[in-house]
Image (cartoon, rainbow, N blue to C red):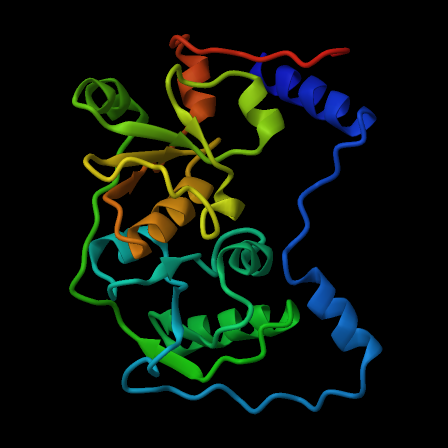
Length: 240
């Protein structure tokens, strides 16, 4: 089964000494813990507009972000799993972060999560969405999208991709999306896909913030693609 193949793949990765990816701000967290006492940050405040120079983190649900967001915003829903870690992977630790949220409670939870992973430069939060919208895709759309020239970008980790991937797809783990991929095509849509949807949505928002036409596969992913018996390529490493 898909689940048993995943378990075997991860077991092989662990036995080979492949460690889990660590947030890029881990060194900063360690340094803060070793340094002098850091006073409690002031309560976050609502802002009329994001400050100049701040990176925009939209913490609303994916559906709300797709329906309307501010240009350049990266979407990491605070309601999702591992919010702090995922945000740390796709944000620039050296730049201030303006949180975009649906309400004050959502904003405060997100800011507390950011501070827990050493993102202390958070000037405040802005409520509401924006005028820019984006399209999403489903697993059922993939064949037609590929036929029309779209590039599929698999944003899972390497051991997940080894279990089976869509022929011709590109591979860029979502956590590396902010810092790499200068050679992705700009003349057609990019369709991001992960195991079940959340990481694909984050990756697509990062790509859109860089000017790409990126559409995430939501409400499903490679688990569904493999379960339906679709054509895939698998990769088996030496010794596995």
